[in-house]
Length: 217
Image 1 (cartoon, rainbow, N blue to C red):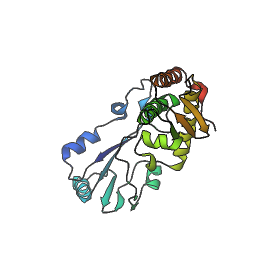
Image 2: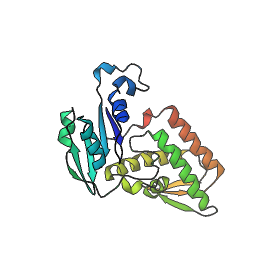
Image 3: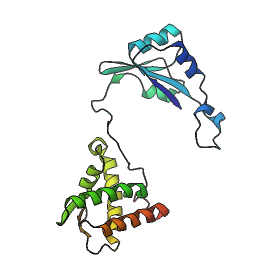
Image 4: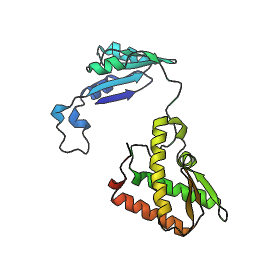
C-alpha cells in the first residue's frame, strides 16, 4: 500500500515523523479478517524541488516523484522492485485527470448504472414532452456524466454493452408505448410518470439480484 503525500512546498519534520509511524494496521478499513502481517506500506512524496530539498535535508530515503514543468523524475528507490521498474522519469501526459464527477464506471454493476440511466432518460424525455425523443445509447451515456470523452475506448464499449442490457430491460417492462427500441443502440422515449415508475422497478429488480446480468465475454 502506498501512502502518497502530495505537496508543492517544504515538508516539516513533524510530517516526516507522522508518515514514518504509519503501519498497515492503520490503513486497514472495513475488511476485518485481513491479515495485516501479510501487508506492507510505503510512503511516497509527490512535489516539486522544495519537496526534494526537504527529503535530502532530512537525511531520509523516502521515494518521491519530483515534478519540474512538464517533466517528472523519481527520487530514491521504492522497496518494491516492480514500482522501481514502472516508475522512473518521463513527461507528464498531455491529458489531465478529469475534474468533473464520474458517477459510475464499466466495473460497476448494472444495478448502479441503471440508477443513473433511469434518471437521465427521464430528464431527456421530459425535455421533449409531447413529442417523440430518439435517444442513442452513447448520447445517453455522454449526458449521464461529463467525463465520457476522457475514458478509454474499451471502457466506453463496456459501458455501452451494459447500457444496452439495461435499456432493453426498461423497454421490456410494460411501458405502454412510452419506450421502444428503434435499432441496436437507439430508443424512442416519451415522458410519463408511469415510465419513470417502470424504470424504478427495473432498478429495484437489478439491485435485488444482478447475477442474471453477468458481463458477456
